[in-house]
Image (cartoon, rainbow, N blue to C red):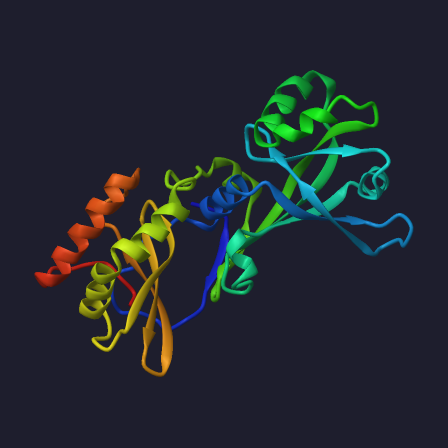
Length: 268
């Protein structure tokens, strides 16, 4: 049994539960997709006060954040005095909808990577940050890694919970992770009529617009525009999908199921 603690607010449903990835899987996927976060360290100049820094990061084989930082930087000096820190990671859509977008805060101790691991960490980091090759060999720069103590994931309004390091390490990145943004755009532009018919069949017949806001291997979230209100919900794929073509096929299948009056797992 997972030891992640989750909380989802909202009305109770009498229907079957709509499957979706765990908080650990969503946190792992979000951290994998982004490359920069906000690092908070404990100030040496003002003891006890948090000090925020924009921080590019890489990942080791288990998904622990790795930083290439200079001993001259204030955040490095802070870490050498107290290794406790947190890294806040947000997706690009948080600029438009900061409270509705997913985000994750990773907390842990940040210490220097042992010399025997430098080669692997260097390769992984430069794979994500090629420009860092210009300063990676400067004497004052070194690799530091966060040993994760705990994680807090927020998936949007009403979806949040703590994730243990063990659950995070064991979680897999969603197979649609790198393709999801393009797929969401495609569905909302080329399949808008299909989404609208699906939303009206499964939910309120007065829905004026149905927009996909998130997509994963198990299903997708819809934002429904209805006269006088905006409502959110989720629709599950009949079976987990692994790629773009399976997403398109599954959406067509869902529309056909709904039109035929067959059961579709949803919370619209």
